[in-house]
Image 1 (cartoon, helix red, strand yellow):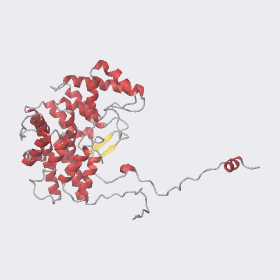
Image 2 (cartoon, helix red, strand yellow; image 1 turned 60 degrees about the horizontal axis):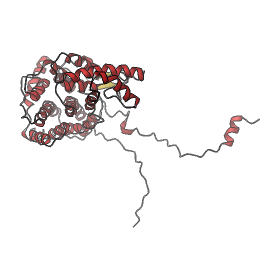
Image 3 (cartoon, one colour; image 1 turned 180 degrees about the vertical axis):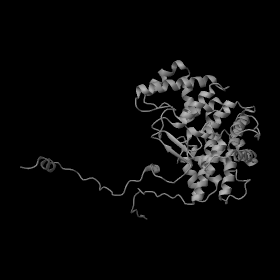
Image 4 (cartoon, one colour; image 1 turned 90 degrees about the vertical axis):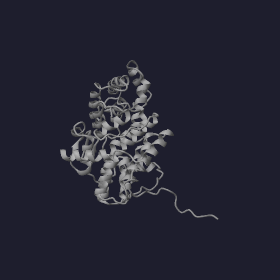
Length: 400
Protein backbone atom coordinates (compact mmCIF):
# COMPACT_ATOMS: atom_id res chain seq x y z
CA UNK A 1 0.00 0.00 0.00
CA UNK A 2 1.33 3.42 -0.99
CA UNK A 3 2.06 5.87 1.78
CA UNK A 4 -0.57 8.62 1.73
CA UNK A 5 1.97 11.41 2.19
CA UNK A 6 3.99 10.13 -0.75
CA UNK A 7 0.81 9.95 -2.82
CA UNK A 8 -0.13 13.54 -1.97
CA UNK A 9 3.29 14.79 -3.02
CA UNK A 10 3.03 12.96 -6.35
CA UNK A 11 -0.15 14.72 -7.51
CA UNK A 12 0.81 18.32 -6.64
CA UNK A 13 2.85 20.22 -9.23
CA UNK A 14 5.03 22.84 -7.53
CA UNK A 15 6.62 25.55 -9.65
CA UNK A 16 10.26 25.88 -8.61
CA UNK A 17 11.17 29.24 -7.09
CA UNK A 18 14.43 31.10 -7.40
CA UNK A 19 17.42 29.35 -5.89
CA UNK A 20 17.94 30.10 -2.20
CA UNK A 21 21.17 31.97 -1.60
CA UNK A 22 23.45 30.72 1.14
CA UNK A 23 24.67 34.27 1.67
CA UNK A 24 22.97 35.88 4.71
CA UNK A 25 20.93 38.97 3.95
CA UNK A 26 22.67 42.10 5.21
CA UNK A 27 20.61 44.00 7.81
CA UNK A 28 19.16 47.25 6.56
CA UNK A 29 20.64 50.38 8.09
CA UNK A 30 23.13 48.26 10.08
CA UNK A 31 20.26 47.17 12.36
CA UNK A 32 21.65 44.92 15.07
CA UNK A 33 25.25 45.26 13.88
CA UNK A 34 27.82 46.12 16.55
CA UNK A 35 29.90 48.80 14.85
CA UNK A 36 32.09 49.91 17.76
CA UNK A 37 33.06 48.94 21.29
CA UNK A 38 32.60 51.75 23.80
CA UNK A 39 32.91 52.48 27.50
CA UNK A 40 30.63 55.52 27.26
CA UNK A 41 27.01 54.34 27.38
CA UNK A 42 24.79 51.29 27.07
CA UNK A 43 21.07 51.09 26.24
CA UNK A 44 19.10 48.09 27.52
CA UNK A 45 15.69 48.49 25.93
CA UNK A 46 14.28 45.24 27.33
CA UNK A 47 14.84 46.24 30.94
CA UNK A 48 14.63 50.01 30.63
CA UNK A 49 18.21 50.69 31.69
CA UNK A 50 20.54 53.42 30.43
CA UNK A 51 24.14 53.28 31.65
CA UNK A 52 26.32 56.39 31.35
CA UNK A 53 30.01 55.90 32.12
CA UNK A 54 29.25 52.96 34.40
CA UNK A 55 26.38 54.62 36.27
CA UNK A 56 22.69 54.08 35.72
CA UNK A 57 21.14 57.32 34.52
CA UNK A 58 19.11 57.69 37.72
CA UNK A 59 22.37 57.81 39.71
CA UNK A 60 23.57 60.84 37.75
CA UNK A 61 20.66 62.98 36.56
CA UNK A 62 19.74 65.58 39.15
CA UNK A 63 22.73 64.60 41.30
CA UNK A 64 25.69 65.76 39.20
CA UNK A 65 25.96 68.84 37.01
CA UNK A 66 26.09 68.66 33.24
CA UNK A 67 29.74 69.73 33.35
CA UNK A 68 30.54 66.91 35.81
CA UNK A 69 28.77 64.37 33.60
CA UNK A 70 30.77 65.62 30.62
CA UNK A 71 33.99 65.12 32.60
CA UNK A 72 32.87 61.57 33.36
CA UNK A 73 32.52 60.77 29.66
CA UNK A 74 35.70 62.56 28.62
CA UNK A 75 37.97 61.07 31.29
CA UNK A 76 36.20 57.95 32.53
CA UNK A 77 35.47 59.25 36.04
CA UNK A 78 33.60 61.98 37.87
CA UNK A 79 35.76 64.98 38.79
CA UNK A 80 37.03 65.80 42.26
CA UNK A 81 35.89 69.11 43.70
CA UNK A 82 39.12 70.77 42.58
CA UNK A 83 38.80 69.28 39.09
CA UNK A 84 35.18 70.38 38.82
CA UNK A 85 36.14 73.93 39.81
CA UNK A 86 38.99 73.95 37.29
CA UNK A 87 36.71 72.66 34.53
CA UNK A 88 34.08 75.29 35.37
CA UNK A 89 36.65 78.10 35.22
CA UNK A 90 38.18 76.84 31.98
CA UNK A 91 34.83 76.50 30.21
CA UNK A 92 33.47 79.89 31.32
CA UNK A 93 36.35 81.59 29.50
CA UNK A 94 35.43 79.68 26.34
CA UNK A 95 31.74 80.66 26.26
CA UNK A 96 31.96 83.80 24.06
CA UNK A 97 31.74 82.92 20.37
CA UNK A 98 33.94 84.45 17.64
CA UNK A 99 32.60 87.25 15.43
CA UNK A 100 32.54 84.84 12.49
CA UNK A 101 30.12 82.55 14.34
CA UNK A 102 27.98 85.46 15.51
CA UNK A 103 27.71 86.71 11.91
CA UNK A 104 26.43 83.30 10.81
CA UNK A 105 23.84 83.27 13.61
CA UNK A 106 22.70 86.77 12.67
CA UNK A 107 22.21 85.83 9.00
CA UNK A 108 20.40 82.61 9.94
CA UNK A 109 18.03 84.44 12.30
CA UNK A 110 17.39 87.22 9.78
CA UNK A 111 16.47 84.72 7.06
CA UNK A 112 14.35 82.55 9.35
CA UNK A 113 16.55 79.46 9.18
CA UNK A 114 15.73 76.81 11.81
CA UNK A 115 17.81 77.08 15.01
CA UNK A 116 19.40 73.67 14.37
CA UNK A 117 20.65 74.94 10.98
CA UNK A 118 22.06 78.05 12.64
CA UNK A 119 23.81 75.82 15.16
CA UNK A 120 25.25 73.56 12.44
CA UNK A 121 26.55 76.44 10.34
CA UNK A 122 27.97 78.37 13.29
CA UNK A 123 29.55 75.23 14.76
CA UNK A 124 31.57 74.74 11.59
CA UNK A 125 33.25 78.14 12.16
CA UNK A 126 34.33 77.45 15.73
CA UNK A 127 37.74 76.14 14.73
CA UNK A 128 38.75 79.46 13.14
CA UNK A 129 40.25 80.78 16.37
CA UNK A 130 41.68 77.43 17.44
CA UNK A 131 44.72 77.15 15.18
CA UNK A 132 45.39 74.03 13.11
CA UNK A 133 42.57 71.49 12.78
CA UNK A 134 44.99 68.68 11.96
CA UNK A 135 45.88 68.05 15.62
CA UNK A 136 43.69 65.19 16.83
CA UNK A 137 45.79 64.26 19.85
CA UNK A 138 44.02 63.48 23.12
CA UNK A 139 44.95 66.86 24.63
CA UNK A 140 43.72 68.73 21.56
CA UNK A 141 40.49 66.73 21.51
CA UNK A 142 39.83 67.44 25.17
CA UNK A 143 40.47 71.15 24.65
CA UNK A 144 38.10 71.24 21.68
CA UNK A 145 35.47 69.29 23.59
CA UNK A 146 35.44 71.93 26.33
CA UNK A 147 35.24 74.69 23.72
CA UNK A 148 32.35 73.12 21.80
CA UNK A 149 30.24 72.29 24.84
CA UNK A 150 30.84 75.78 26.24
CA UNK A 151 29.96 77.60 23.00
CA UNK A 152 27.01 75.73 21.55
CA UNK A 153 24.55 77.08 24.16
CA UNK A 154 25.85 80.60 23.47
CA UNK A 155 25.02 80.12 19.78
CA UNK A 156 21.48 78.92 20.54
CA UNK A 157 20.86 81.75 23.02
CA UNK A 158 22.13 84.36 20.53
CA UNK A 159 19.82 82.91 17.87
CA UNK A 160 16.82 83.09 20.23
CA UNK A 161 17.53 86.77 20.94
CA UNK A 162 18.17 87.74 17.32
CA UNK A 163 15.13 85.86 16.02
CA UNK A 164 13.03 87.90 18.46
CA UNK A 165 14.59 91.15 17.21
CA UNK A 166 16.75 91.59 20.32
CA UNK A 167 20.47 92.01 20.85
CA UNK A 168 22.40 88.96 22.06
CA UNK A 169 23.54 88.98 25.68
CA UNK A 170 27.15 88.24 26.55
CA UNK A 171 27.73 85.17 28.73
CA UNK A 172 28.56 85.49 32.41
CA UNK A 173 31.42 83.72 34.15
CA UNK A 174 29.72 83.19 37.52
CA UNK A 175 26.90 80.91 36.38
CA UNK A 176 26.71 77.25 35.46
CA UNK A 177 26.28 76.36 31.79
CA UNK A 178 22.52 75.86 32.21
CA UNK A 179 22.02 78.99 34.32
CA UNK A 180 24.09 81.06 31.91
CA UNK A 181 22.03 79.86 28.95
CA UNK A 182 18.77 80.94 30.60
CA UNK A 183 20.33 84.28 31.52
CA UNK A 184 21.49 84.85 27.93
CA UNK A 185 17.97 84.13 26.64
CA UNK A 186 15.94 86.13 29.18
CA UNK A 187 18.43 88.75 30.40
CA UNK A 188 17.50 88.19 34.03
CA UNK A 189 18.48 86.01 36.93
CA UNK A 190 17.20 82.51 36.14
CA UNK A 191 14.80 80.63 38.41
CA UNK A 192 16.86 77.98 40.28
CA UNK A 193 14.17 75.37 39.59
CA UNK A 194 14.37 76.09 35.87
CA UNK A 195 18.18 75.90 36.02
CA UNK A 196 18.03 72.52 37.72
CA UNK A 197 15.47 71.33 35.15
CA UNK A 198 17.62 72.30 32.17
CA UNK A 199 20.79 70.94 33.76
CA UNK A 200 19.06 67.62 34.47
CA UNK A 201 17.67 67.50 30.94
CA UNK A 202 21.14 67.94 29.44
CA UNK A 203 22.54 65.16 31.67
CA UNK A 204 19.63 62.93 30.67
CA UNK A 205 20.37 63.27 26.93
CA UNK A 206 24.19 63.42 27.17
CA UNK A 207 24.68 60.04 25.48
CA UNK A 208 22.46 57.21 24.27
CA UNK A 209 24.29 54.35 22.61
CA UNK A 210 25.07 54.26 18.90
CA UNK A 211 22.34 56.57 17.65
CA UNK A 212 22.50 58.15 14.18
CA UNK A 213 24.24 61.39 15.16
CA UNK A 214 26.80 59.66 17.38
CA UNK A 215 27.57 57.16 14.63
CA UNK A 216 27.98 60.06 12.21
CA UNK A 217 30.48 61.73 14.54
CA UNK A 218 32.45 58.51 14.89
CA UNK A 219 32.54 57.82 11.15
CA UNK A 220 33.91 61.32 10.51
CA UNK A 221 36.44 61.00 13.35
CA UNK A 222 37.51 57.58 12.06
CA UNK A 223 38.93 59.25 8.94
CA UNK A 224 41.25 61.24 11.27
CA UNK A 225 39.16 64.33 10.69
CA UNK A 226 38.94 66.87 13.53
CA UNK A 227 36.43 67.16 16.34
CA UNK A 228 34.71 70.32 15.06
CA UNK A 229 34.03 68.58 11.73
CA UNK A 230 32.70 65.50 13.51
CA UNK A 231 30.36 67.47 15.78
CA UNK A 232 29.16 69.60 12.86
CA UNK A 233 28.27 66.40 11.00
CA UNK A 234 26.51 65.03 14.09
CA UNK A 235 24.35 68.16 14.28
CA UNK A 236 23.37 67.60 10.65
CA UNK A 237 22.30 64.03 11.47
CA UNK A 238 20.34 65.17 14.52
CA UNK A 239 18.35 67.62 12.40
CA UNK A 240 16.41 64.78 10.78
CA UNK A 241 12.90 64.21 12.20
CA UNK A 242 13.58 60.49 12.68
CA UNK A 243 16.27 61.39 15.22
CA UNK A 244 16.09 64.76 16.93
CA UNK A 245 12.93 66.38 15.64
CA UNK A 246 10.22 64.68 17.68
CA UNK A 247 9.45 66.84 20.79
CA UNK A 248 7.81 69.70 18.87
CA UNK A 249 4.76 67.69 17.74
CA UNK A 250 3.96 66.98 21.39
CA UNK A 251 3.11 70.66 21.83
CA UNK A 252 1.10 70.61 18.60
CA UNK A 253 -0.92 67.79 20.14
CA UNK A 254 -1.48 69.71 23.37
CA UNK A 255 -2.61 72.81 21.52
CA UNK A 256 -4.97 70.69 19.43
CA UNK A 257 -6.50 69.20 22.57
CA UNK A 258 -6.90 72.72 24.03
CA UNK A 259 -8.53 71.80 27.36
CA UNK A 260 -8.66 69.09 29.99
CA UNK A 261 -12.34 68.48 29.22
CA UNK A 262 -11.55 67.55 25.61
CA UNK A 263 -8.65 65.24 26.41
CA UNK A 264 -10.24 61.80 26.70
CA UNK A 265 -12.50 62.26 23.68
CA UNK A 266 -9.52 63.46 21.61
CA UNK A 267 -7.33 60.52 22.65
CA UNK A 268 -9.98 57.90 21.94
CA UNK A 269 -10.70 59.43 18.53
CA UNK A 270 -7.00 59.38 17.57
CA UNK A 271 -6.59 55.77 18.67
CA UNK A 272 -9.74 54.70 16.81
CA UNK A 273 -8.32 56.30 13.67
CA UNK A 274 -5.09 54.33 14.11
CA UNK A 275 -2.95 57.40 14.71
CA UNK A 276 -0.03 57.54 17.10
CA UNK A 277 -0.25 59.59 20.30
CA UNK A 278 2.88 61.75 20.31
CA UNK A 279 5.17 61.33 23.32
CA UNK A 280 4.10 57.79 24.22
CA UNK A 281 5.89 54.52 23.45
CA UNK A 282 9.46 54.11 22.20
CA UNK A 283 11.20 52.13 19.45
CA UNK A 284 13.99 50.83 21.71
CA UNK A 285 12.48 50.71 25.20
CA UNK A 286 9.91 47.97 25.70
CA UNK A 287 9.31 49.15 29.26
CA UNK A 288 9.34 52.64 30.72
CA UNK A 289 12.04 54.87 29.22
CA UNK A 290 14.49 55.63 32.07
CA UNK A 291 14.94 59.15 30.69
CA UNK A 292 11.19 59.70 31.02
CA UNK A 293 11.43 58.51 34.62
CA UNK A 294 14.06 61.17 35.37
CA UNK A 295 12.35 64.00 33.49
CA UNK A 296 8.99 63.09 35.01
CA UNK A 297 10.47 63.95 38.41
CA UNK A 298 11.83 67.18 36.94
CA UNK A 299 8.33 68.05 35.77
CA UNK A 300 7.03 67.45 39.29
CA UNK A 301 9.61 69.89 40.67
CA UNK A 302 8.75 72.46 38.01
CA UNK A 303 5.16 72.52 39.19
CA UNK A 304 6.42 74.90 41.90
CA UNK A 305 8.45 77.12 39.57
CA UNK A 306 7.60 80.39 37.85
CA UNK A 307 6.76 79.09 34.38
CA UNK A 308 6.30 80.90 31.09
CA UNK A 309 3.13 78.97 30.22
CA UNK A 310 1.50 77.58 33.33
CA UNK A 311 -1.75 76.69 31.56
CA UNK A 312 -0.04 74.51 28.95
CA UNK A 313 2.06 72.85 31.65
CA UNK A 314 -1.03 71.96 33.70
CA UNK A 315 -2.82 70.69 30.59
CA UNK A 316 0.15 68.47 29.75
CA UNK A 317 0.10 66.84 33.16
CA UNK A 318 -3.62 66.09 32.74
CA UNK A 319 -3.06 64.75 29.21
CA UNK A 320 -0.31 62.43 30.42
CA UNK A 321 -2.53 60.86 33.08
CA UNK A 322 -5.43 60.46 30.67
CA UNK A 323 -3.40 59.01 27.79
CA UNK A 324 -1.68 56.41 29.98
CA UNK A 325 -5.04 55.31 31.40
CA UNK A 326 -6.77 55.08 28.00
CA UNK A 327 -3.80 53.28 26.37
CA UNK A 328 -3.80 50.65 29.11
CA UNK A 329 -7.50 50.12 28.44
CA UNK A 330 -7.46 50.15 24.62
CA UNK A 331 -4.07 48.53 24.02
CA UNK A 332 -3.34 46.41 27.10
CA UNK A 333 0.10 44.87 27.44
CA UNK A 334 1.74 47.20 24.92
CA UNK A 335 3.65 49.23 27.56
CA UNK A 336 2.98 52.50 25.74
CA UNK A 337 4.19 54.74 28.53
CA UNK A 338 5.21 58.37 28.55
CA UNK A 339 8.57 58.78 26.79
CA UNK A 340 11.39 61.30 26.82
CA UNK A 341 9.86 63.31 23.95
CA UNK A 342 6.80 64.20 26.00
CA UNK A 343 8.81 65.39 28.98
CA UNK A 344 11.33 67.21 26.80
CA UNK A 345 8.50 69.27 25.32
CA UNK A 346 6.99 69.80 28.77
CA UNK A 347 10.24 70.93 30.39
CA UNK A 348 11.60 73.09 27.56
CA UNK A 349 8.38 74.97 26.88
CA UNK A 350 8.00 75.62 30.59
CA UNK A 351 11.31 77.50 30.72
CA UNK A 352 10.24 79.71 27.82
CA UNK A 353 11.65 77.96 24.75
CA UNK A 354 9.70 77.47 21.53
CA UNK A 355 9.42 74.12 19.67
CA UNK A 356 11.78 75.08 16.80
CA UNK A 357 14.54 75.44 19.40
CA UNK A 358 14.06 72.02 20.97
CA UNK A 359 16.32 70.07 18.60
CA UNK A 360 19.12 72.61 19.07
CA UNK A 361 18.76 72.24 22.85
CA UNK A 362 18.97 68.47 22.42
CA UNK A 363 22.21 68.98 20.47
CA UNK A 364 23.68 71.14 23.25
CA UNK A 365 23.20 68.28 25.69
CA UNK A 366 24.31 65.52 23.34
CA UNK A 367 27.42 67.49 22.28
CA UNK A 368 29.33 66.30 25.35
CA UNK A 369 28.63 62.71 24.35
CA UNK A 370 29.60 63.34 20.73
CA UNK A 371 32.91 64.79 21.87
CA UNK A 372 33.54 61.78 24.09
CA UNK A 373 32.93 59.43 21.16
CA UNK A 374 35.33 61.43 18.98
CA UNK A 375 38.00 61.14 21.70
CA UNK A 376 37.37 57.39 21.90
CA UNK A 377 37.39 56.96 18.11
CA UNK A 378 40.61 58.93 17.66
CA UNK A 379 42.21 56.78 20.34
CA UNK A 380 41.13 53.61 18.52
CA UNK A 381 42.31 55.04 15.18
CA UNK A 382 40.44 52.60 12.96
CA UNK A 383 38.55 53.62 9.82
CA UNK A 384 34.85 52.75 9.90
CA UNK A 385 34.24 51.31 6.44
CA UNK A 386 31.24 48.94 6.18
CA UNK A 387 30.52 47.01 3.00
CA UNK A 388 27.51 47.47 0.74
CA UNK A 389 25.50 44.80 -1.07
CA UNK A 390 25.11 45.44 -4.78
CA UNK A 391 21.57 44.68 -6.01
CA UNK A 392 21.75 46.35 -9.43
CA UNK A 393 21.83 44.76 -12.85
CA UNK A 394 24.98 43.25 -14.36
CA UNK A 395 26.30 42.58 -17.83
CA UNK A 396 25.22 45.80 -19.52
CA UNK A 397 26.99 46.69 -22.74
CA UNK A 398 27.05 49.89 -24.71
CA UNK A 399 25.03 49.92 -27.94
CA UNK A 400 26.58 52.65 -30.09
